Length: 177
Image (cartoon, rainbow, N blue to C red; front, side, top):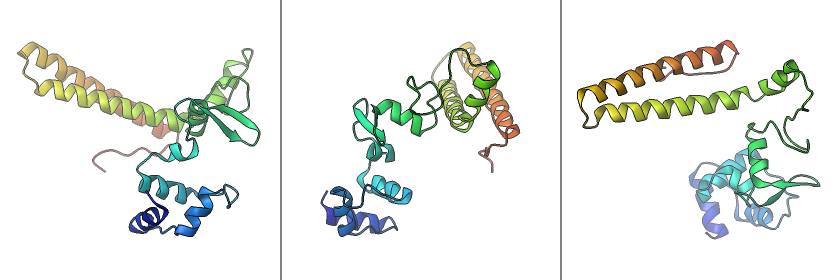
């Protein structure tokens, strides 16, 4: 895609980024400074995940994630998304020593709760969808009953998970809202 096409696409998305600005970004003339909204709009225009713009060497190439700190792209990605908790050399993310108390580990782990909660919700929703699909498949009555029970149990577990996350003060919506 040319710079002109990309500029046109960003305008179509409601956040025009000029061809000149795109050229400066490409040549690093803006000192590698991008607004978050620019990253999101450029990613959408290019049809790639925003993280791929930040870490183009995904899935596992080297990336300078902080000035002077080069790590594997997968480590940078998990740190950026809040999933990284055991980065081995301590340059990124939340890491702990083997002798940290359970309380200290728990306090550090708590910071990733929104990310872990979101992942757990998505996983439960996928499991429920699978169980519901299986109920509609051609099976004998016993198998259908088993999958229906599975779907009901998963739905209860999802409700419990959402309640726990709400108690922690996190924003959790219901499909009916």
